Amino acid sequence: MQSIRGRGRKPSSGPKSSWESVSGWYSGYMGKEGGDYQRDLVFPGAMHLLAPKKTGFYLDLACGQGAFTKQLALKCFKVDGLDAAPSLIDQAKRNAPKNAKFTVDDATNFAHLFPPDSLDGIVCNLAIQNIDPLGPVFSDASRILKPGGSLVLTMNHPAFRQPRQSGWGWDEERKLQYRRVDKYMSEYEMPIIMHPGSDQSEKTYSYHRPLSVYVSELAKFGFVVEALEEWVSTKVSDSGPRAKAENTARKEIPMFLGIRARKA
Image 1 (cartoon, rainbow, N blue to C red):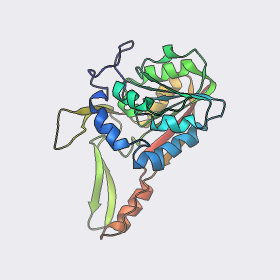
Image 2: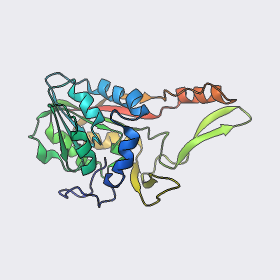
Image 3: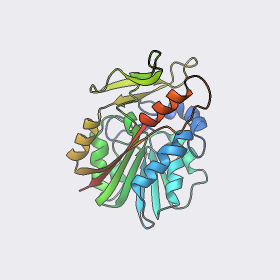
Image 4: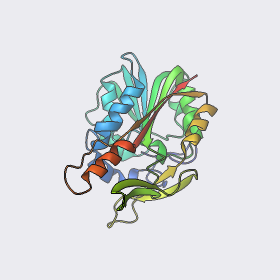
């Protein structure tokens, strides 16, 4: 799902930001239609923000095995899916609808694949936090979107789900579940072990950035943020002494963030 550092480099299994090495695990986790959070929260939220037109042409950037791309294909004239991991694109091509095309390429260098001002919208689901740097992504998106076209980003909420710098805590005196946040304003790169307790060498990388960085970078390349949504967990605790506190915390502390930015 992730990008390849450096413009013009061919995607492969080598660069540390590619998900090629964990494609088998990722495909098993996601299945054909996405994991629980993707199906229940992220995909419906992204579709709502994108509001695809029947006659539109869209790009699913860092599409993985194409679960959302195929949903989007049902609602528009044409959609392309792009990812740096060849194994994931191979899976995306299986049983793909005729109006969906899949390509292996770099999420920080993709404008060469499309004519300028040709796309109605671009969506990047739960992947922008795994792409570095941001600038080339937004620059290329701006070049190929039509004036007024939308760029939709969904991500783990950067204020509450910082990689390895946040977590749930329990206040015994107040009988309260809370979210512990160790870092927010500092940008950082964090390796994520994909098989804890098993193969420690298989890891991906996540990049934490505060919201101000995303908004500033979008503005730099001619985007105006016109919608921002925060999505809470759909899971429910129905037993145990902390069930009520857990459910309250889930309703109050969002897991995911969705942004729609319009090309001015």
